[in-house]
Length: 118
Image (cartoon, rainbow, N blue to C red; front, side, top):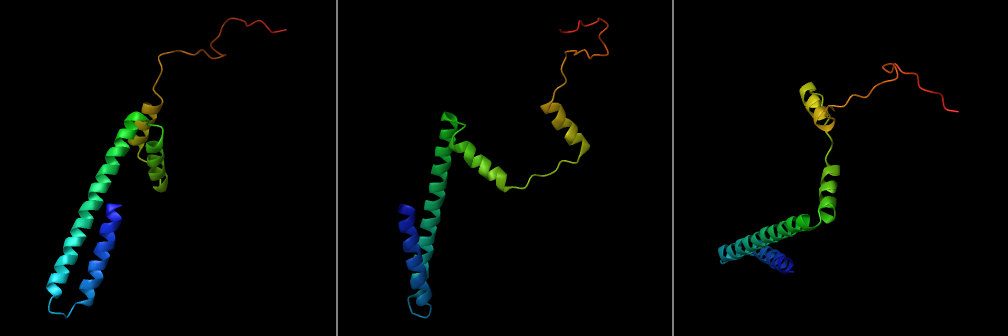
């Protein structure tokens, strides 16, 4: 709300300063425009900081809600890179599929006869 009012005021000052280019008080008009632009930029930065803090707090409360959607939209908009470096691929595969300590016997390893099912 405040940002929109500052935006309107900044545009108004910009138009006035552009129209008054050859007037005797053009330096004052440009100074007013620069001041309005700085206030607008500060308000935008403050608003972004506030929204970011709200998003972080929401992640702490519910990580699967809106914050997940924000991240997924951002990730889907970026093209996925193909990993062709062998060492990097090996690292990814070992992280995703760790080697298990269990031994799973195969049909060839079994020496016992399995009774048929009737």
